[in-house]
Image 1 (cartoon, rainbow, N blue to C red):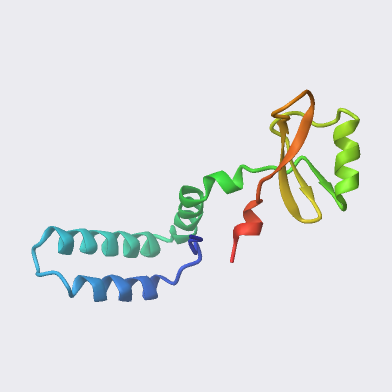
Image 2: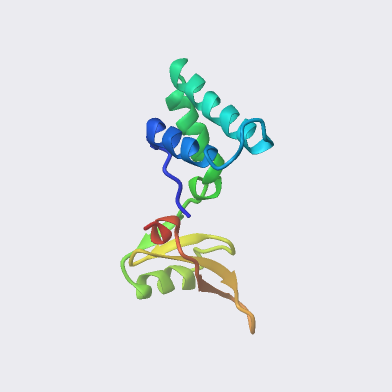
Length: 125
């Protein structure tokens, strides 16, 4: 699931309020929701909302931010030629015609091959 780091604070507060109505005052759920709501308001009032958005983004999508495509090719033929020239190494991530592939060792025999590995942008809605 993709998380929206540019969330609307007021909309989130409304949802927390709606959820909070389901729990009696003084319950652990009520307390947790109040703490979360006040923390979000505190961050906004202290002018740290953009810092929090950056933290939120990194917290939920650290793997996608660290993924680096080594090479991009327009066609499969170009990618195959690159691999045949010995340019690829096991673990390299490449893009062929907009789709991701990882360089892996062949299961049978010597050499390397491509394994279809979707890139983060392919999995976004």
